[in-house]
Image (tube, rainbow over all chains, first blue to last red; front, side, top):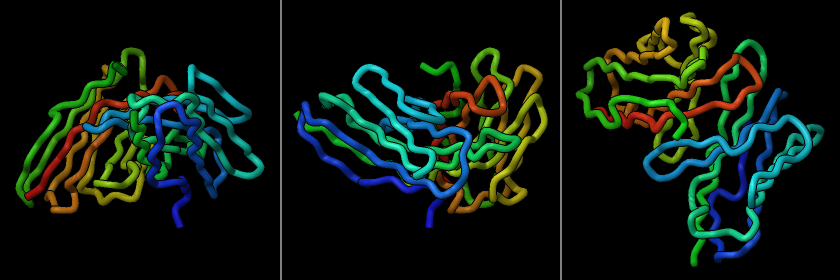
Length: 110
Length: 113
């Protein structure tokens, strides 16, 4: 079993829909990251959070430390949101290495 | 743009050869981490360098080695390449060791034939 699990693995939505991607983890963490990866490989950091909720534009990330669960929400989705969304946890200790989930492939259709 | 640049962007090597990948970290960042991402998988941690010293290593064999230079740029070296080493190699720089945002390069896609 992976230490970081995401669901769904694939998601197709119509433009304008509200989207939720879930992440569960089984290790203790100091922080959780949500990242976006476009075709070609580049990864962009969306959020880093260790408690509560953060909002940036149409993106909202929440985390429940007790339940070891986080969600990424996209409001009013747009085709340009199509990408792979990856959840990664920082287990803490002496490094800030990240343990990644396998990602959620999101396709938003016009 | 994250300010982290990797070179080359694509590379084809033959099994048994050696390869060096390079990462120029964002200005002011003293920590660089390297990840291997196989097709359809999430990235896997290879190792991290902090102020020119290795500071943590994932489950990769010794033929994966690295360096960090005084300007905090970094190299990943892989000896005796195997077919399974074909992957996207990502580097990420950050301004501190813990609880900081990571800034990723575009990656180097290595194909071993």
